[in-house]
Amino acid sequence: MNAPVSTGQVAAGQPQWEIADAPVPYAEALARMEARVAAIRAGEAPELVWLVEHPPTYTAGTSATPEGLVDARFPVFRAGRGGQWTYHGPGQVTGYVMLDLAARGRDIRAYVHSLEEWVIRTLWRFNLVGERREGRVGIWVADAASGMEAKIGAIGVRVTRWVSWHGVALNVDPDLTHFTGIVPCGISQHGVTSLHREGVPATMEEVQAAMMASWKDVFG
Image (cartoon, rainbow, N blue to C red; front, side, top):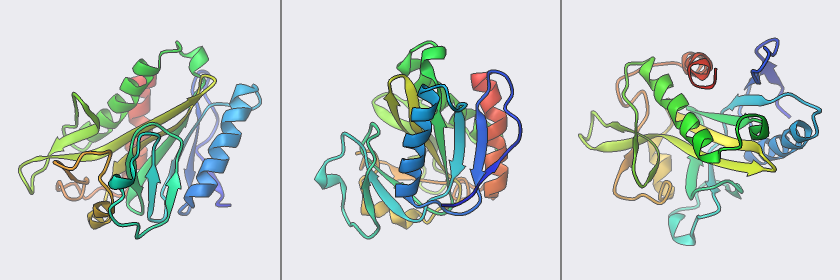
């Protein structure tokens, strides 16, 4: 198993943060999240935000249909989260968020809104405007290359006895052709983009730091 890099002491009321130091196979991430959720629920571990990259992988949410998998060129996993098809791969930061929602208001809709706001505020730090769209999951930007809206961030959550897992994925500089193997989140009429495609040459480390800073803006 890849050794996670801890970011230091856990402040009161704040989750522990870890950044994986190497790409994490998806099955390994699922197993670790499931174990951590059980430990949080039992009061044996603090909440956790875990930032990772994955090898190229397609994942199916609970609403995914076979038609959404166009070309299974990479390993395919049933994720157990909400939503449809998603791609994970190098150049994308995936933030797995394991929080005790019983202690945070028991409001799943508000929690998902906060995850969206987290991605939006992270993009603000790079002078990119990310927005929600009614009827569409994820965070969207006006794509400079095509002139159309494109998806830059995905949201997919699961809540087990009021402990959250899964979370967000933000495209920094992935190979965007890898998304053509699926219909991302069931939406075929809009494209997918990344910070680099939008003219922001941020490093993974810079985006991870922005995510950590923006977390405090949203979650306190």
